[in-house]
Length: 66
Ligand SMILES: [Zn+2]
Image 1 (cartoon, protein in one colour):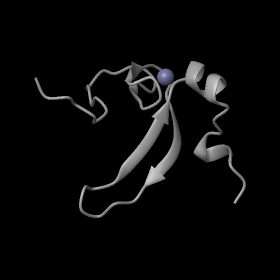
Image 2 (spheres, rainbow, N blue to C red):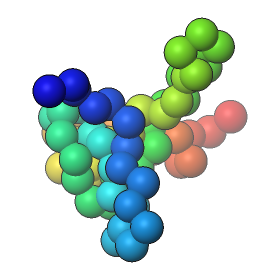
Image 3 (cartoon, protein in one colour):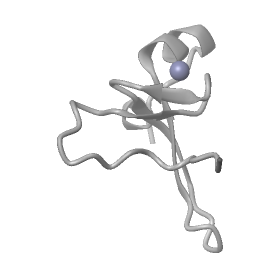
């Protein structure tokens, strides 16, 4: 079975369900932590769930100072 690394795109998904890169699983209320820009692989974003945010002291991308 292939390992799917893309976030789900369900038509009736709740709030912000997605893939948490830190614990390696799907979770609700994930937040965008970092953006990867890689042309060849299409790039994408790194998302983390609230528990991982606390555990690793992550700062959501939107909350960062420029
Ligand atoms: Zn997590």
